[in-house]
Amino acid sequence: MCGKCKHALLDGLPIEGTADNFQTLLNSDVAVVVDFWAPWCNPCVGFAPVFEQTAQERARSVRFVKIDTEAQQTLAAQFQIRSIPTVMVFHQGQRINMINGALPYSQFNAWLDESLQAVGE
Image (cartoon, rainbow, N blue to C red):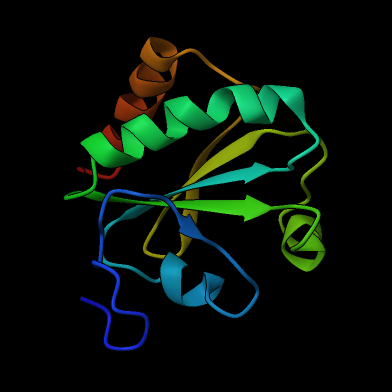
């Protein structure tokens, strides 16, 4: 339970990434999966349920973060986001994989499994 907001920690919902919290999130001991998206992007909106379901299923072993590229333009520029959705996997602060475009659940999870195997997760 968060002492500040009183929400459950790692409740399975993706965390909202901001310029203020992103570096701390990336330095996690567990892998971090980041969805760069925008609310006006139809493929992003369509991919959101896949990302959220996967986040709930893997909440104990992987941290999931969503970054609204409209609200967090500095982060979008820092990671050179040119198309959305873009999903990146980080481990100990280092990017280990990236994919552009919305994937169906099975393909996203297969890609994520392959990405996490590379770091022993």
